[in-house]
Length: 237
Image 1 (tube, rainbow, N blue to C red):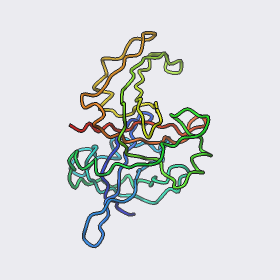
Image 2: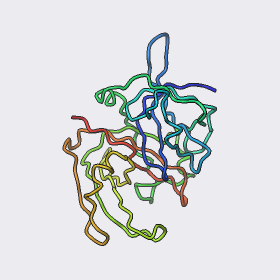
Image 3: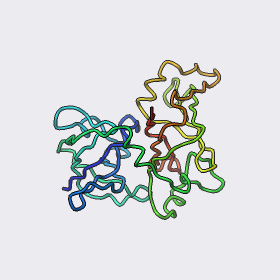
Image 4: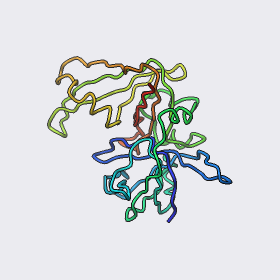
C-alpha cells in the first residue's frame, strides 16, 4: 500500500457514483511540489467511487480543494487513463487542509488542445486516437473563453423518463468545444431551471463570466469513445 497526498480538483458525477481526482503533492527536500494527476478507482462498474470510499477519518467526505492523504494499492496501467490508481478501500482517507480558491489558478495548464481528433465531434475521442497521443493524460485544468451553459431536457427511453442535460460551451486556443457537465454543485444550482421536454434549451452564464477554471476529464471508453466532461467549475470571484 502507498499513500498519496492529493489536492482534490474533481468530485464529479460518474454513473451513479463519483469520480474523485486531483494533483499529487510531493515532498521534495522538505518543500511541497505539485506532481501528476491521480484518479483513485475501484473494481466497481467503471471504477466509480461511492461515499464509503472517499469518507475521511474524521467522518466527513473529501471535497474539491481539500488536500487529502489517500491509501492506494497499485497503479492500474490503464490505457487512455494513466492517472488511475487502485484504491485500498478498507482504509479511511485523511484530510490535511483545504487550499484557497486562489491557489487553484496556479495549477492551470495549457495543453495544445483538448484531445481533438480529426473529423470527430469536440466532445469525444476514440480509444485508438487517445492511446496514440503523447504525452498521455486524461485530465486538464484550463481557463476557458466565452463560457456558457446550455440546459435541456430529453426523453430517455432506457430510463423511461426525462433526462436533464447540462452542456458547457466554450473556446480554448481558438477551438469551440461543447461537452457535458458532471459537476454536482453546478447541477444542484440549476436543478429547477431546466426546460420541460420538447421546450427550447435555456442558456446560462456565470456571474463571474470567464473568470473561472474548468477541470476537464475523459471518461472510460463508452460506446466506442472516451467522452470529455467538465468535472468541476471553479468560479474565481
